[in-house]
Length: 66
Image (cartoon, rainbow, N blue to C red; front, top):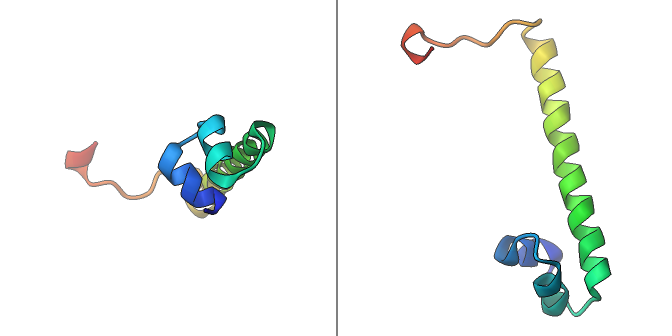
């Protein structure tokens, strides 16, 4: 089982991921932390790109959706 499969199945449960992958719990914790840091960096980058693309303005939203 790969880490992404185990993470999708068990979520951030270090004990369950460690048992499923056959690795120690602290190693599973390290992999989860790396995964969460990566997704945070991706979200932060997307937010920066959106700000640049729209030059500080929100993208078009119809009047009824506001």
